[in-house]
Image 1 (cartoon, rainbow, N blue to C red):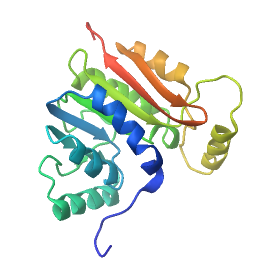
Image 2 (spheres, one colour):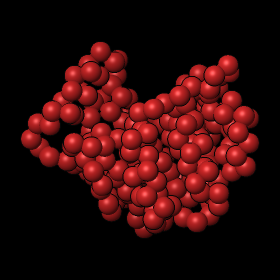
Image 3 (cartoon, helix red, strand yellow):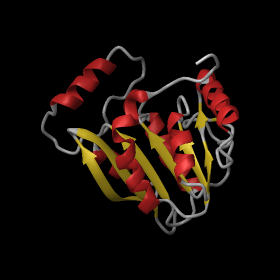
Image 4 (cartoon, rainbow, N blue to C red):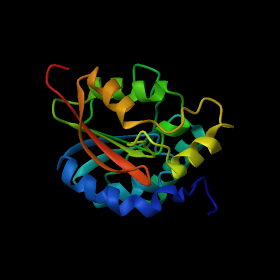
Length: 202
């Protein structure tokens, strides 16, 4: 591409399905914090789909942030912000509030502490009723699932990778932080989208 931009095709097959969930879940105005935005492909796509929202990408990896920044400068999408350096497990975060949070294809490839960090961040940043949307491989059934088992096998060589999380683990950890699962789409044989909302009293 001649610049710092990367490509990330892994979500392209499910992007439209995720977009449909976001259309009925995200607020009409405000800031969406995307955790681990990677190449910035998805941030660019979703920012364009929601012109009324400020889209704030972030990533811990300098190369990913360079890719996102190059995309922001090259495309001039007015509601797409420059990326923040953000490690979900390292508090305080560089943002103190958001109206929604989105995390795509992260939990299975990072240490278990990443899930806890994201949930803790959502508890601090989000107002009551605001959504946290998590998308990626997820175990809904207790029985073995070939696709998910293959993902776990492939991750064994990745240092610190937690492997495919279970819906039970996500639900239990979220409830301790006053976040509640309100919708689950997909799972097992297809990537899942989990919608959580921050409950009152959190």
